[in-house]
Image 1 (cartoon, rainbow, N blue to C red):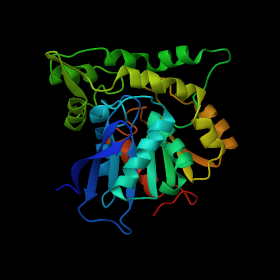
Image 2 (cartoon, rainbow, N blue to C red):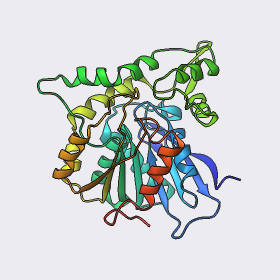
Image 3 (cartoon, helix red, strand yellow):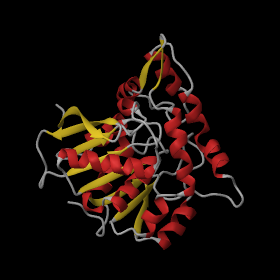
Length: 300
């Protein structure tokens, strides 16, 4: 028996409505806690189902960000400030806050900016392999760097697939998911597709991804948010990256930022950038830190 019931809500935002998944606990925990979970740059809200399972008693609210999933008809402009304002609209629509905000990858960037722009809605932040500026080699072009990091993901958005099983096969061969593609993940990949002239394509719009990706390097909205950071914050690092190889963040890079900011940091062992939330072991480790991250970041 599931510890949650699941439904969706469409929230009015600038330009239309934003879809959000809401998992209500069958037996609410003490204080009826809520977590806002914010997905990555080409993901959807169903990326969080493993985390939901690991948080019985907790209400989890997770949107499809503007330009993704069932929110993909929303217009630009995009960027972290735009996403932060959409997230604030979700919380206000549901009449909840302040909440614990868990952001993964780009979602962690948007979460940090949410805390800056709408601090009254955020109790604490858990930034999962995202939300700190990426390391930029001296003289590197930000656009070239992001093409190198996100190139495979962007290429996927231009692809079409014969059916849902063909899309699942694509992910079965992906280095991050070899040997890990469960039925739960299959349902996530099914949801990610939309019809396209007799075939199927990923729901994330390329213009949304390209509209957001540069800010992951330049930190246009992020850097002011980090400089003014007043929210208890934990950063969780994945030791392996998007293709199950080199990490998105080196331990040394994280340590340098931790010395500058009022944050705590930890590493989740034996996960990559995806499986830190889209796998049972990674999600359980994140959930454990959501509940008891540290003396400084203890939401319940």
